[in-house]
Amino acid sequence: MDNISSKLERIDQQELSQRNPQAFSEFISLLPKAEIHLHVEALVTPKSLHALNQRHQLYPECKTSDELKNKLDLKEIHDLNEMIDQFIKVQSFFREEEDFALIDQHIPEYMKNNQITYMEMHFAPSSFLRNGLNFNGMVSNFENEVNNICRETGRDVRIIIDLSRTFGVDNAMNNLNFVKSYLDSHNDSRIIAVGLGGSEKTGTPKEYGPVFKQAQQWRIKTVAHGGEDSGPEQMWSTLKELNPLRIGHGTCSFQDEKLMDTLRDRAIPLEICPTSNVITGKFMKKMSEHPIRTYYDRGMVVTLNTDDPVIFGIELNHEYNNLYIHLNFTLQEIVQIIRNGYTSSFMSEQDKVKSLELLDKTLEKAIKQVYKI
Image (tube, rainbow, N blue to C red):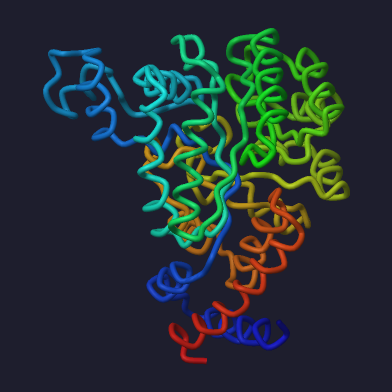
């Protein structure tokens, strides 16, 4: 590790005078990574939506994926609510348990393209349940496909069930009960946590406190979106009422010095999704304005993620390039953020050690191949 650090420091010193985006892009593409904030439905491509439309004849007049896109009015996104609206439109195409195979077929390619060895994917069942699907049948089908992927690729995918605040507290508690019942009958399930996503304007963290307390009493890990579309007061409430192990986004934290210090001192990881935050545009309009630089410099635990790859047109390697190009992160800092992705995950301690050992071995090779050191 010391040898790797000294080599990275040497490269960073050389780049003080001239940075090399092309070399960095090659370098980052070689490194193994974890991604712990990604919504599985956001891997669905227009081609897959078209296939679902043909299967279920929801819009029989649409003969091509472009016609379907125009029909759905999948326009450019300007805020979080528009993103959620588009997300729900995508979900509406899933009408049978077998449909989830169309999501799963995109997972191996995405992970391979970005050298992701471990991924935690948010899966939101509420819309599907409202369409008449059965929770156990739907999740079992999804898990079976994921198990096949992991067996065939050697990569590891875990599932976070999004309880959702979009449809109210009762719906969230129902989802939690479904999860508990499912876990009780599936000892080897890939479900490793529950989360709280959806519109931050439809319910306060205090309202969902009992749901999270019940999950924690059942020893189910909890994460929560927070500070993506609201101010620090919502983040404080999230910490107090929900007590999550990680926070998705936390974008607004830069507005409150004490909040940043609390997140740092409690070592609560933030699942940062820069492109998502810039596109939804609540707190910044340019990548160079993103506060991940501030958070890292302050000693907070930050991880890098994509949120919704297809919807936002972003992949994980591109997000690391954004840190390098627009936010002046050094190679040493970026490697630390990759490490944070593994250590902040819910994988076993043994698997974390193995993943970090693989990262170090790959770093040696990548430094030699790209930077000739």
